[in-house]
Length: 454
Image (cartoon, rainbow, N blue to C red):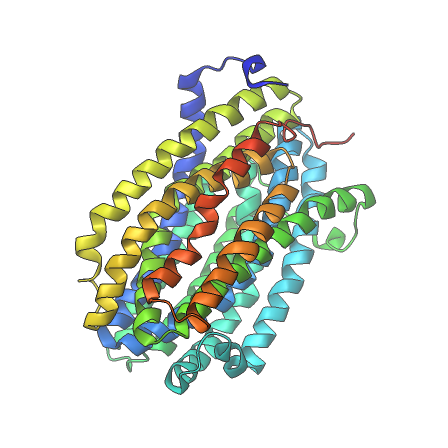
């Protein structure tokens, strides 16, 4: 198939559908990013060390999220196609699979945080003070990691079954409560003792309990796919094979990306507290501005998957082409936003002069990075994944991130002792550098396929 054979689409209907799915997801992503932003802001008002330690400690949850992401995305890829086909019975079996995988992952991460928090913190920093603060955070927040995988499965299932808005409101409500609990527990309002970093951890745990409770309550309503406890551990062999075929490449790609990003944080953490603090703030800004492309990328996978699963391959292909082109527009807008907020970001938290200087430079570098990030998120994690072409992401990460960006950053930081901003620039190379490769893969149209079975 070539691009010229793609079906013509009604752009008004297409963008209306895209907005209906992407807007709640982008809002949900924004609200989740706001938790990290509020942690940084509130703890940054207390001390740079508090903010930096928590930022490093939350990399553990970031890694867990990579495992959970692989589970929920594999479920979403198959779920979008089976939902487009109208097969609700298979959707329930798929939900059971997701819960089994995510439950095992959550138990392992919770146990690691409770039993070896100091060892986990030593991965990211050698500073004893940061290790101490981060360890206290992990021992409390670790309990929230036990619930995260389960609630994310519920939210993912809602998104692919035309319940995007309830999913967004559940997640957003939990985030708002998290922020409120943050303020009360970090600063010690209403007569409660100030807990600082431990308060941020407790706020996260309480909000996760509430989020899961809301998922259970909402999913009990009519029209929702929900698990049956009696069948939770019974499997469908064919569906399990199909799930693993999607899950394993996604897990490989998620780990390559997640551990790679964590490696970037560790590298910057070992370049000094000023570099680590600046990188922590820059990461918060990046995550806030990436919310739009995250929402569009998730919506792209759902829309393309629905059409392909329904057997409408040409329409699915046409939607994918339109979304790929739009990804560049989203990238350019994101770049402009990063440049626009530079004068304001450094005023939000208390930073040393050196950290503030690093932050301004990182933001300029990040502005260029955003184009690659948006194009790749929408094209790879949206369109390609929507058609089950999940292996490419793993290959591209292995080459661009682990073969180029990480080795350069490690050599620059620990062998050649390059300036902080040059090392940071190395950590941003992978997204921009793989755009041509992504476009070549896209135009092979291997993602235009129906994954469902009778």
